[in-house]
Length: 71
View 1 (cartoon, rainbow, N blue to C red):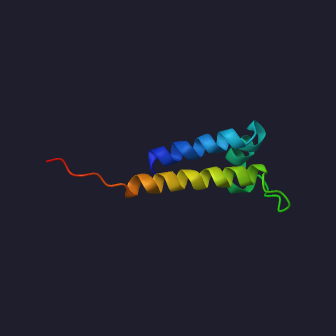
View 2: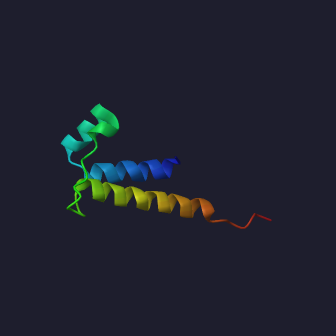
């Protein structure tokens, strides 16, 4: 994972999860991730997933952008 993508992902986690949720994630790894409520499309798990998808898309766009070589 590129540094920019990792920073984006960290920002998303910190913005969309409560301090308690972040602490559980750090302590328990994936088992501490917020539970996705199937009846909600706007819970913490959905928000983080959407933000991480945006981070990945931005990183992919940045790596596929080509620049003209210097003469």
